[in-house]
Length: 233
Image (cartoon, rainbow, N blue to C red):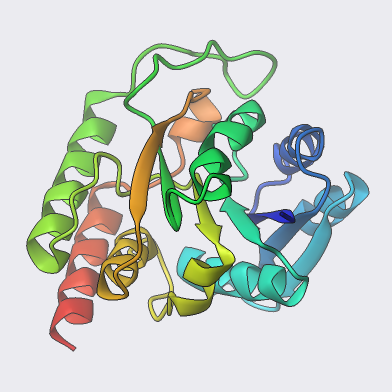
């Protein structure tokens, strides 16, 4: 089965080359979606061996994932993996995440960050290690609850960027939201199509850099509002 990894990236010149390099040690074909970056994100991803698809303007995480999944399908992927460009994911976990799809047990797999202790950080980016900050846990718990209430989907880590899709699943999931709300929308789409969803524990590498990414309070409010609109309309 041909696996392709999709990495959405916006202003990730600090980390994207290292992420691509580590991922390609596991899966050779990597597609980076440069989502309108004005720094060297695209060039550094390309120099590390990734295929780069560029948005002329910043369209958001949802749009980048939609573009990346479409590109992977066009390239003949049987399994599509998505992960973040900020270095928080361990590429060695890809085999664990895609295993349920390879065995025919799932159509979609979520890598949950709450099954293993985080890995110690190595190198730059402000090495931290340690547990997920309380604010991050609260934001994720809130998103989990909202996803369950609005779409009827139970998941321990709805906001995880580490996922895998079978081709069957990827062809059916329709991404209509552009930004952070896409994580919950993907689960809603999977439920709407009756896809088999499972969770697999993944390890996380926390640094000051990776912890600076993700949803703050204001972004969380915008995400919640977007999900309400998605549910109603």
